[in-house]
Amino acid sequence: MAIKASKNSSTERLITAESNKTPFAVVEAYKNLRTNLISILAKTDGKVLAITSPNAAEGKSTTALNIAITLSQLNKKVVILDTDSRKPSIHKKIRINNEKGCMDYLLGTHSLDQITVKYNPYLDIIISGAKVKNPAELFSGTKFLELLNELEDHYDYVVLDTPPINLVSDALIIAQKCDAVIMVVRANTTKYEAFEAAYDSLKVLDIELDGVIINGSGGKGAYYKNSYKSYKYYSPYQESK
Image (cartoon, rainbow, N blue to C red; front, top):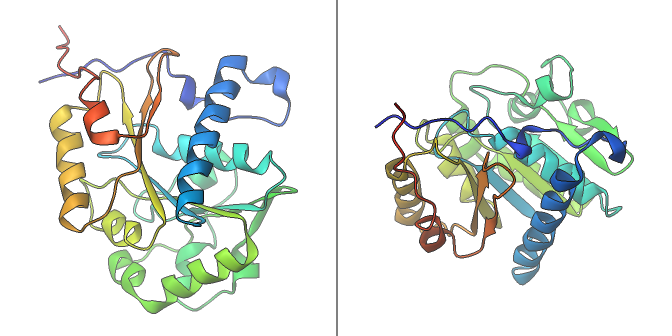
């Protein structure tokens, strides 16, 4: 069943330091989202937040980066880590080369200091870095846990931009090591069956889905705490002509 993509997608905009360049509705939407995310993490005394999606092109990476930016505006130390090593995009959004990053650390060729990029006084960014043939194996290894532990020691919040759940196994491996998992879906694009498949994959591994962000809803998107039941309120069965 074909679904129309929304052309009015507020969460596709990257929040800038100059507030007058970012629409008020976008800023407020992310502030509300930030409040919910902080509450979720506080309940488990956690720091590590995974942002994922069922499939590609649903706004996951932009949403993850905006969440990190918004958290840093509280003068909290934040880092965003691009773990979507098969199709990384964070480096493109901040306009730097994808030369060294997360995968280089996991390969043991670079230290944390060598892969960290300063975005603003409170936000650091770690891009994906080297292309590897076996990212799932690296994310399953002890080196990835060492990286997360080191980041938790240095930062108040750690945001992970993960691969889509339905495409590769990496996202599930990564999600198992996080304190909270949020799924991004695109209004009028993400099929309910795709969401359900991703949700079931998490459920099989006893990974709790803490919420869903509906992207591209023309300013009417919302953050839902009870993710699975609330997502049913969104009607994805609108056929394109």
